[in-house]
Structures are given as C-alpha cells and as structure tokens.
Image (tube, rainbow, N blue to C red; front, side, top):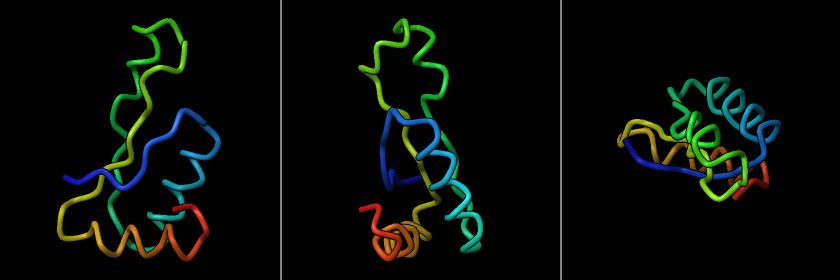
Amino acid sequence: MEMVIASNEPVRLSFLMALLRDAGLQPELYDMNMSILEGSAGAIQRRIMVPSPQAHAARRVLREAGEL
C-alpha cells in the first residue's frame, strides 16, 4: 500500500475516496480513528492509501482533479 494524500478534512477525504473509486481504484482510509485518541486536535492526518500498483494512476486522478 502507498499513501497518495493525507488530510484532516473529512469532506475532502470523502470526495477524494469517491473520486478514486469512480476511477476504478481501491483506496483505503488509514488513521481514521486516530482523531479520537488525539482528542480531535487535528495533529494526525488521515491517509488515503492504494495498492502499490495503483499508486501512479491514483496520483494522476488526483492531479487531474486539482487535488495534488
């Protein structure tokens, strides 16, 4: 798995996950529960990860959408 983007913005993360899924990729959201442990201070960003063979395509999709 490779990280393609990290953010603390839940709406943006949801949009990016949908964008990647619509492109036929298999994104996963990591560190989703870390905000509970940190007290929602925003210090730990959530990461969108994809299988390594899909990383290049995922970055291309995000770049074309103006998100990278």
